[in-house]
Amino acid sequence: MGHRRCDECETSTAAPSPAAARWNDMNGDTQVSQVTLGIIGTGMVGSAVARRATDAGLHVVLSNSRGPETLADLVAELGDRARAATPAEAASAGDLVLAAVPLAFHERLPRAELAGKTVIDPMNYALYPGFSIPELDSNELTSSELVQRHLADSRVVKALHNYGSKQMLEMFRPAGAEDRTALPLHGDDATAKKEVADLLDVLGFDAVDLGTLAESWRSGPNTPLYALPYIEQPPSGLTPQEFVAWAQQATGVPVPAARVKELAAAAVRGPAGFQM
Image 1 (cartoon, helix red, strand yellow):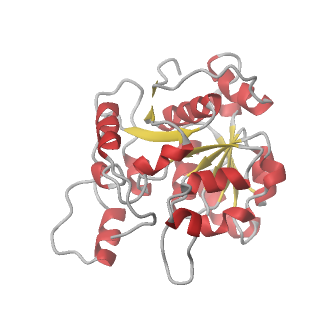
Image 2: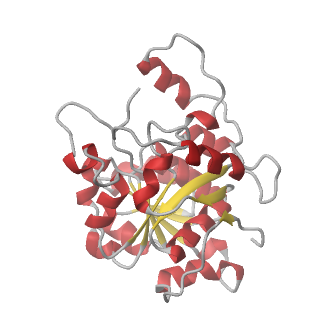
């Protein structure tokens, strides 16, 4: 674990929480196998991260809105390092917590149990009939600032939001590998960003700190850094629905940290909400 990498991550002067201290002690007495990742939401993102985490030696506590009993097959597939729980239990158990729920449901996240925790936010704002958030439509806030406002006592870090689940399971590499992929992260707390960068390193990816939650639009939908750099060139003539289906199964392409920074710098903020 001696080659963790987060380009431009800073060290916070704030005292870490007990969970943060436990996570940050991985290079000391605490082993990866003693660290627990709480996961709320077991769709494509949550399930893929759970598979990578257990393969990398972490324990995971999985939860969804339908109840622990619905996760029996996934837990059995993941093995002894995984167990199912309620969202509140997963939040309490996690040294870090991945909130992989639709943005429309972010207010259902258990605030009390997530207080003091670092919460990873992979949510993106997607427009669909009957759902609109005026503060996002006007670019007054980013979606992650909205999540942070709900989780006022947590430390939200935007990450794992611009990368495909299939690529997550195929493109991980050991630290120092020439073809190791870098992923962006954003946050307002430097210690929390380092925790998430360390997690990405365990999962097999470098991290690039792209600034605050207010700047997280730079790696969100409709920007040069969203999804496309990480996959092969799509075939021409696809409808939007065909493209989404194709991208979910596309071959991954490694993206180094320098390219992540270049693409983020080239981003221009337009209307919020995923658009084809």
